[in-house]
Amino acid sequence: MNDHLDADGSLRLLSDVAELAAERPAPRVRQGVLARIRALTAELPVPSEAPTAAEPYAAQVAGLDALLARAPEEQWRTPTVTGWDVAGLVAHLTAVDAIAAETLGLPIPPELGAGPDVELRTQVVQRAYADRPPADLHRAWRGQAITLLRWASANADRLETTVPYFGLPLTRAEVLADRGVETWIHAEDVRTAWGTSLLPPTGAQVSVLTGAGMRVLATVWGGLNVSDGVLVHLTGAGGGDWLLDPGGTAAPAGHGPFGAEISLDALEFCYLVVGRRSADDVAHAADGDRALAASVLTTAALLARL
Image 1 (cartoon, rainbow, N blue to C red):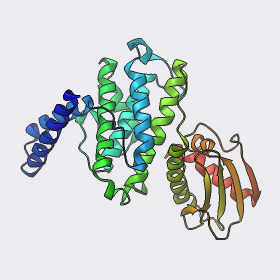
Image 2 (image 1 turned 60 degrees about the vertical axis):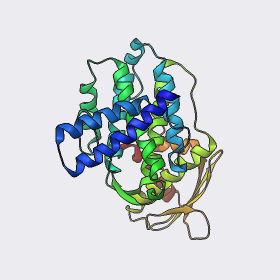
Image 3 (image 1 turned 120 degrees about the horizontal axis):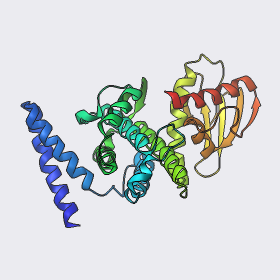
Image 4 (image 1 turned 30 degrees about the horizontal axis):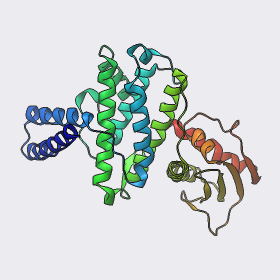
């Protein structure tokens, strides 16, 4: 506990120094300070509390962190469903977390690359850690994730402000929810590859993930110039009713016109938007304009490619 307190205090002091360095740029000094901040951050515990939007992310980071910490080095070379081995997959998570951190205005270490190109950033991180022990990659991913979570807790009053994220106008809360979604599914990929028990999100976490997913879906789907709204019933833990408006908005269902209804399990919806289900094979029921309903499922399945 004292080590964590010392690290936390040192981190606050170094953060102050980094701000001063930013005012009077001295690149080598600033990079050295930031490197020390990252090293200290990676030694802190994963936050046990976070704003609601970041709760799924915090829970999934804690679960994946514990899983990676006890894995022998050779297990990191196990292939996963993504086409990467576990090390390559963790490098990918680290790269996209870095893009999210940049979006929120946080400094990024040079070895994590720059810019919004996910494929390029993933390759940069994979190359940077290709010849290093898996523990180094674990530490880099962990430190980046904790940095995001600490930022969320310190900036809870800014989470509803909008930022551009992969070409979409999302709130900072939705950016954090996105990190929760991706960390959950890739942690599940690792568990499947290693033959360990899955850790599904709780109903409360699913509610956050589906809410963010529905709002992103509405933004993309509304750009298709659809003619009518769709009422989406998400069943099971974390579910709820959502009305997708032709104008590109989604809100908990109340009163409003719609031309089709779709019903599917809330967790299955999450699998759909992360590319683990297709629009054709996800279990659902539809009523009304079937083509309109199908356009929602097809668009949801495409979100994983954004």
